[in-house]
Length: 362
Image 1 (tube, rainbow, N blue to C red):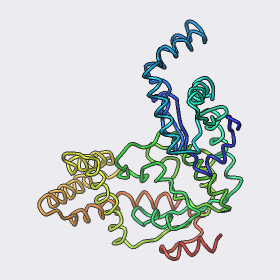
Image 2 (image 1 turned 90 degrees about the vertical axis):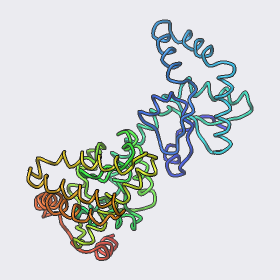
Image 3 (image 1 turned 180 degrees about the horizontal axis):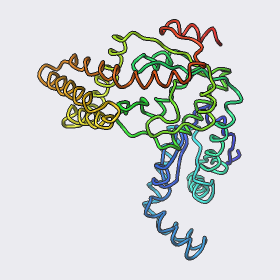
Image 4 (image 1 turned 180 degrees about the vertical axis):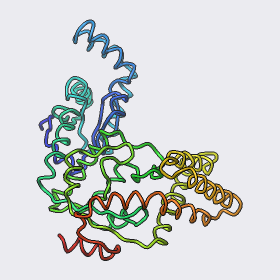
């Protein structure tokens, strides 16, 4: 059995579990789907070995590494790898360049009678493959962009289509001033890696058309790859039209009900206070665009709704707040942007009509 592997496409298609033996600080900067970080060296050990390598060369650095990761420490780390392998028999191993750390990890496991295949070129090679696949992907599919006002239910429609990619889900952000979801957005590297996985899988499934939500150049802190931005700008634009009352219902559910539930699940002592503070911070950031008069009004509506929830547990007071934001903040911005791209609009309709149009377009 070869103990080196570089069929990166199969890793994506098979959703292969990955054993990442880099230091935690490296893993946090960027990793892959289905990867678990069980480092051969922790951050402090890696730092010491790096200094030694710089000052005294590779041989001394390797010697120091064996001294730092010895006896009980080494045993504990090997056991954690074996446990992961037992739970994931198809797992592959990698470090940054596929060099000493993954090779040494592989040797330690072999001494225990366990073989694991490591990625040729490690993280760096697999990452380069994924970035190249994003660049090349636009040669293999035609995009359709699904637009619509805030709260129109674009994500709901997208999730009913097998040939769609949920960019907001990948970015953990709804792409608007009030669209931050509880939890940290992925690092840009992770966003790109996860997007590459989605693109490779959709293209392999034979989809010649892929549907994206109309997002622009960034979703929260996540930036779209330039070639996909360019492709989307020139793509047919399908507009989902939804009645205001339904838009209020959808937005209320996402921005208030689901958002508060996320804060509760996170274990905050006062989840409502944390959530409301986040909303108030978001409103303060749009003061300039709203103008002082509208900002004062929308803030008062929100405070009244918050007080009502505290008294009765009802979310109904937020309906007026949501409607105000849709009418005076989101819709004017949306209308301005759509007017600039009117020549790209190929269809307008409700959820059922849009889904039927896109299916027929295929």
